[in-house]
Image 1 (spheres, rainbow, N blue to C red):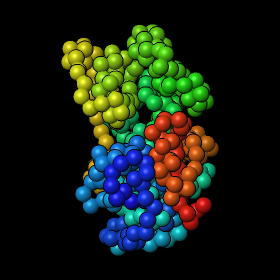
Image 2: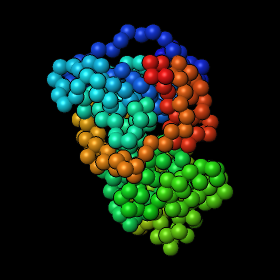
Image 3: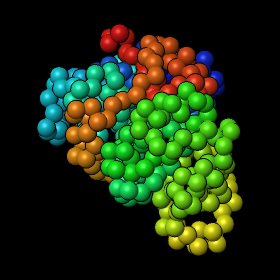
Image 4: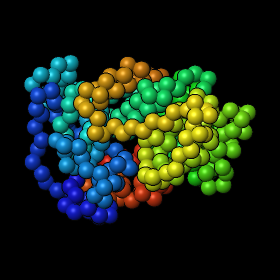
Length: 326
């Protein structure tokens, strides 16, 4: 999928481009499926360019089979079924991946559904656990609980013994969050999440908040934090500039962090992927974790997939199925 000119979903064009070739430390993956992330929508609109040296085509995660191995790569073989964290290029039949960003398809997960995992699992694990250090018995508030990130954050929070609160905009979405294990359900259209989280925690608040909204929720997120709470910002759907009451932050001895994944150096991404493989991948055995897939759309029809995500009518991930895997 190419983007000749930035614009709406119709700007996405299925086209022939030269095959990529793996360089030092890279492998070539024949793609079975890619997944749609909100960052892809921003790239399509011209607001989120790929980092230097990355593929110009959208797509931050995929699954497929290794077709070719570049020099300096060990531990992988042609034919291995994998999923991968990408800086771009996942909306394609073939993509080159640094070997440190490859993961085996987890036990019990279908190959194409594995495309729903790398970006969300790496985002949640790095922000909620490596940075915010969520611990058993603590409460985490997840905004956008029915999103791809949200559905994985619920499952991982429960897996480590945390209490999970979520916000979502419909009863159907909240019901799905409850099925995944969410304990505290807040309809943000009808309820104040600050009040509901305080009520559910006997006034204590949330120990960790995973926030995709940014500026719009900044003040209320600080109010919703517990003493020694940690606010992890991973998105800007609600704007980029907000006002912060430093006094409120000081009074709670709280911390605010903000982190993206795409532009991190290769060694940082490799460290996150290695931690995910060690700590998260075993949880898929026996079904303790599962990818949540809303629908599958043929990759040449990527515009339709972007419309679904823009309208926020989905629960979990929207997948793009490559022609050879259809």
